[in-house]
Amino acid sequence: MINNEKSIEIFDSHAHYDDDSFNEDREATISNIKSNGVIGVLNCGSSIEGARKSLELAEKYDFFYAAVGIHPEFAHKLDDEILNEIKNMASSEKVRAIGEIGLDYYYEENPPRDIQKNAFRKQMALARDLKLPVVIHDRDAHEDTLNIIKEFPEVTGVVHCFSGSVEFARECVKRGYYIGITGVVTFKNSKKIIEVVKDVPLDRLLVETDCPYMAPTPYRGKRNQSDYIKYILEKISEIKDLDIEKVNCQTIYNIKNLLKII
Image 1 (spheres, rainbow, N blue to C red):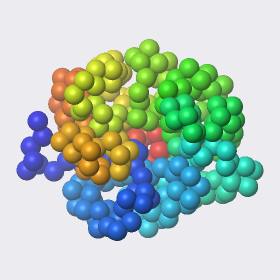
Image 2: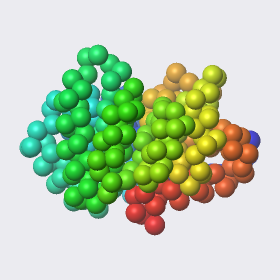
Image 3: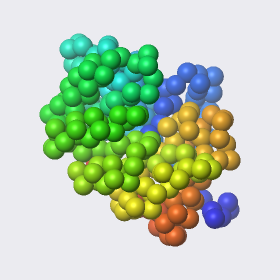
């Protein structure tokens, strides 16, 4: 268990503080998480507007970094103009990844699969050309996600909010990817992700909130924020039977290594 009297440093490898749910108290929330030990946040764009806001946040706050990209939900909007804008944003030293990009077959209203795969490939190619890591969104699309990962062996990154099998995780790790663990690991009956955490080496795990979503127990169903990662760290340390400081130090090293900020 975490000693509440002992401060713990936290690096949130995936957040969305550009989300509308923070509109009324964004500045106060960011100040609060910094006071609670958060030393780093990778804010990930989903739409082009979200990418712009992510860069703005990264330029405003010294402990924020940005990932810029188009989520599969908006894949139909990715044209040459937007791709060029993402490329231009990536010239900022505060942009450390292309994302979040990928595939989402869960929602029927999402763009057709071919359009999603085309947008995914274009952004993987951009990451390859810019020598930047990627933040991959994969929901109910494990096979196609892995096939596209295989097409770009020069690219590495993280499969965020991992929801696949142990076998899929092993394939991703084999190709140099990290596995992103959210608050889902703290939920009852989350057997699948617990097995993944058991199997994946600690030096291939990242911890993330995906805030404002995916709040861990005991905040499940409420708006998430970066300092709640302590509950994810606690659960990982329990699953792997490791000291929480070891888990925390290694996952901070992992994200800093991925983003080349060490």
